[in-house]
Length: 196
Image (cartoon, rainbow, N blue to C red; front, side):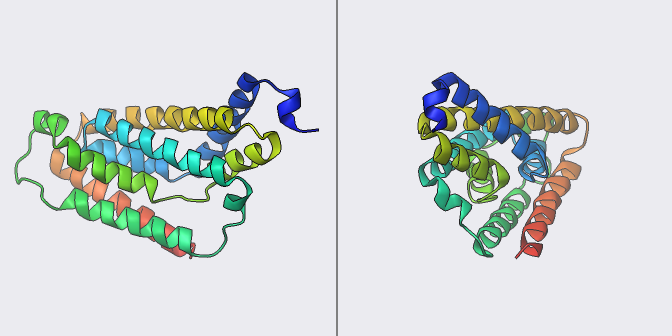
């Protein structure tokens, strides 16, 4: 018997929220990317880009269902690594020599959203959270509830990581933050390449 016959829409959404949140918190690199990007860009721009990218990725996971679970090989890791390296370059280049704390908060929103969206959307495909969401759709046949629960789980994880990143940003000089954010993206890119 399918889960959809036994569980309500809310129960499927809650199950998706819980399973995706737990899957994402265990060994997920986007937490570090969120924190790193919050060191450089306004937290709201990072969160908006993360929320949109998360919603789009979870929609892809729910639509593809079982197909996401069958993706094997090196290509998801290569794309993920490339996204992190491009993000590191974009964070590093085009930086004014002296930038104050106030300027960082107002910063160029279009650049912040582009860098952050690219970092999150093109990395970590086929991760445990997407696989959990896809598996739940395959089992329950309730796409919308799974998508809502999974997306809310990612946004909860993102809010926690951003809180940490903003606290660090408010206490360190901008040059140090730029080096940390760029370096973190490079490390994440290397970690993705190692899995190829």
